[in-house]
Length: 395
Image (cartoon, rainbow, N blue to C red):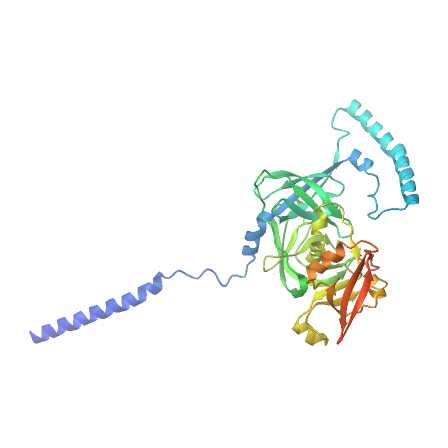
């Protein structure tokens, strides 16, 4: 009996021990598996921004192309002689080309039936919403001379849109989408380029060859591909016809560029208008053709690291990183690594400064407080027209 009792006690102990072990192990098995922390993916960036990316369809009739003439009017006010010459040229264009061609179109319509004279030039591209009120940014070469366009959203909804502003020099255009009362659109966020580096991961969303919501990835290949008016971003993310006007996202989900061009004789050589260039004129694009001024400099935000690296006398303000030869700032004596502290007595961050300069009228003056080393001085700079560079795009 004692032996049986002893075995019974041992058996009970073993059962209790096994229950304790089971209770301590089972919760571990019940814990959910971590959510794929290993996966390097742009899925979140795409998921959060895909509804803001749209397809742009623009059509212009042959008659509209002719009536608008071979070129838009110059952005600045023309002298009287220029206006007279322009009026004479317009009259010659109307009599020599528009009226005869229109008469031929009408004759074709009578003989061949309706529809022949109404053929339209069709252009397709990409755009993205920058304002919930219905403002969509795209390339100027996507919409061209069209006044009305069709904007197609990811869910298949199509809305009529109106081209409300453009700037040919930067190839940017703004479309206002007609929305039902109370409806708002998802919009993207922009990234300042000061912290962007070559090698940073990027993702492009667009509609190449009509393939809607197509996603490609790559890196920033260069930040300084010189164009006629500004430096383009270069990326190896695959871009094709139809991607034009679409967003180039940084891996944090913010837009750093507007996809604009490809190098036709190479592979994966794409170029984008930097976000800084677009941000400077967004408000003007909402209201009509841009009237951009220039002081002929490029700036970056200052900080302690930049101050130490460049040997500057302050960590405040904006550092001048480029000065256009022969520009207004160069004539005023501003040089690279000067620090702009105040504009008309007001301290400014980078984007407000770009907006202020972009809205500058030719001949209008800005008062800049500039620091060179430890020396501070006030420099008047007279705004001039946006100057075209001598270097070619992709140089």
